[in-house]
Length: 302
Ligand SMILES: [Zn+2]
Image 1 (cartoon, rainbow, N blue to C red):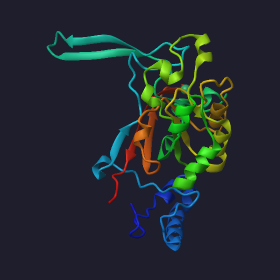
Image 2: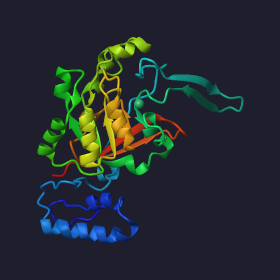
Image 3: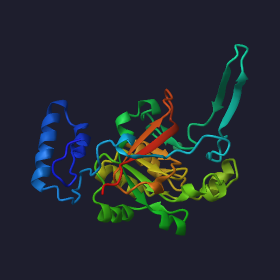
Image 4: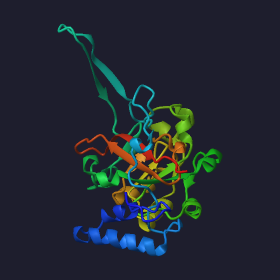
């Protein structure tokens, strides 16, 4: 951690940018960023295109670790056309050797519960889940709350206007961030009727899905204007329930931006300052997979 002055200006911005810089200019980029920040006086005003996050906080620094994943069990919510999660007991008890032993087998669709969509999910030739760069999955996060709009309209789609309103309150979404959309729908989990609009199963039930998502125009804006690295939402899909064309998926995944779905606890995160670590199961050739995501939230400074 490098502090430039007494106003908690840190070099996390240059750390993030350095990942994208050619190796030779990394040190110079850091020096330059430090100089620019010093010249700007680090007045605490967010500068477009930069991150305001802290370096990776740890529990030893007093950071809170927030679990953003639901458990996989018999209640886990899956798309109406999928079977649920199943856990089959292989052994649970004392062995002839005199010691206890437990082991299970599980079976699950890739896309159910808290999971990631890898680019190949909607894009031929896109990255499979094992090939999504880890750098995309461990990053500063911004949390955009649209809870009120989604309470009024369960088919709500997050718009560019919502994102611009968020930026007026919190500063520009930094390049390279993970954007998390908090709809409030995680509070309905695992009640399928309330969470996704129907508890029916099968292809016909898909027409009855109602839950919020991201508008395709806003998806395009996040990718093109803010160069975000990943998106997450606390509903079953980044496209809202009634979607039949899955445009937000195609736009994001088409730009290699992975999508996290069925997240939880987003309401416990600050709008800025958290770092997300979202690591999916490394299924060779998978189109997605179960995701354990956590957020590290630095201790509030006095
Ligand atoms: Zn999915």
